[in-house]
Length: 227
Image (tube, rainbow, N blue to C red; front, side, top):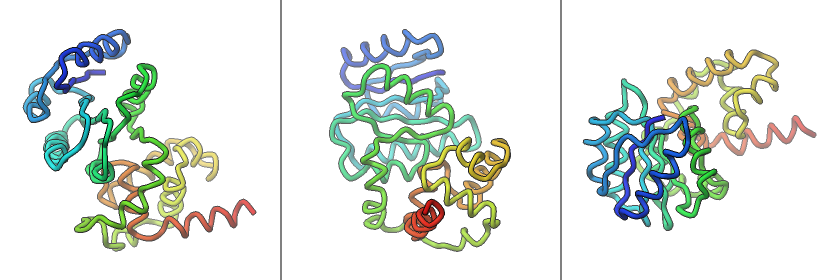
C-alpha cells in the first residue's frame, strides 16, 4: 500500500513516516509539506493513499481534494485521509467528494494503520459522531447534484432493498446473510447501485439517502421487521 504524506511540520511528518514504514504492507513513497503540492505529487508518485495532517479545514482544502478526486477518475482510485484537530463544518462537504475522510489527529498508530487498510478495501473510515451528524449537516448543504430522486427509480427492487440495508450500516457479508445470497451477488448489486446513483462510495450513498428522504423510512421498516 503506497502512501503519500502531506504535512507541514517536519517532525510530525517524520513520525508518521516511521509509523507507516514500520508496517510490512505499507510504504511511504513520497513526502510533501504543502497541501497545494498534493495533486502534482499524486501524478508523480501514483499513491494508493494520500495522508494529510492539518489542524483545520478551509475551502482550499476541499478544492485540493476535488482536484485529486478528478485525477483518480478512470484510473487507480486514490483515497484521501485527513488528520485534523478542528475539522469544523467542512467534514460532510469532504465526504461528499468521495474516497475522502477525516480522522482525529490524536488517533493511535494502530487505528491509523487500520484506517488505511479499511480505505484500501473500498470503505470509508469515519467517526461515529460524524455519521450521526450526516442528516443534520446534509440538510444545510445547497446545490447538491444528487438532490433529485430520479436516480432511485432506476434501481431494481432488489437493488433498492440492498440500498436500504447499506444505509442502515450493514456490510456486504451482513447484507448477504440477511438476504440469503452470495456475498459476490451483494457486491455486484452495490456496484450497480453506486453507478446508478452516480456516487463514488458508500458514504456518498448514505448522504444521498438522507437527502432523498429515505433514511427514516428505512429505519421504520427495519424496526417493524425486528418487532
